[in-house]
Length: 88
Image 1: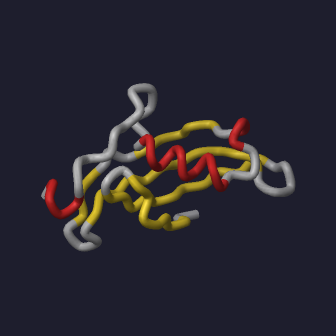
Image 2: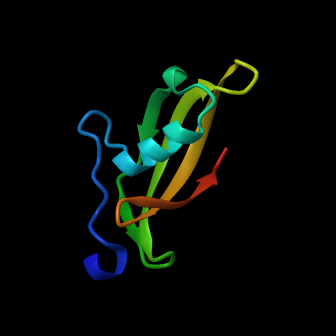
């Protein structure tokens, strides 16, 4: 699996979020300072997608300044986010 997906992405010791997922999210958020962690899944391999996957639920301010609950799926390979999936 390591050859196919690369090494497992590094996870934060604080909340378990993949570091590359957090860096990607921070770069596209309206207000990164408003981020509040809710939960995340383990970082798991997906043979179907050929990469590592993690689901992250958080609260943050939207473009209008209101705080919303969001859930994203992150698809990662070699410590890079390939793509994300907005799950609501």
